[in-house]
Length: 177
Image 1: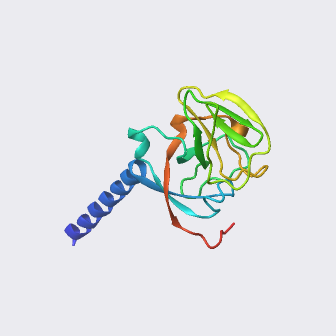
Image 2 (image 1 turned 60 degrees about the vertical axis):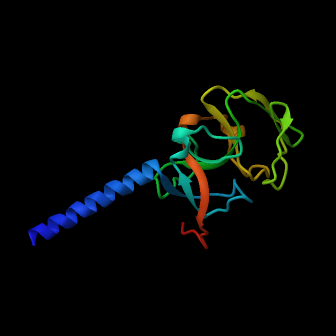
Image 3 (image 1 turned 90 degrees about the vertical axis):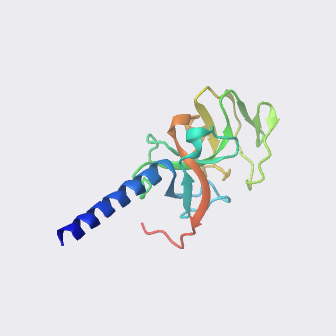
């Protein structure tokens, strides 16, 4: 009997260690909280986030990333992680110049083709040069006041990125507050 209990304990410990390794180095799940990424992502959707990609490669323009932004007031912590994790789209990389004029986003003086948005930005921004180790991110929902992003809190540190959102795993029929 003692051998069987010890065998179960070892199996459970091994399963927990494997789960932590997978969560920290392969993928994790995050819940979209808010409407800042509509129409691409909807409030309550569960995302599978690839934690491994950016350990090898750098983010690319257009990637949808999850990152930690602890100093944002009024945001709710992700109930799966207990952290202020936000989801946004990478618009500009280190060395890029971002300028938003008359509703159009320009990166390095070229207009950005954004098929994923429903409306233009109403306020001008920039120009700003993105420093090494930083990224400029925007939410896909460009309605006034719909997204807290680099226009409001500035570029984000590359080191704050948790991973790339690759898949919507589950739609959520409702949220419990």
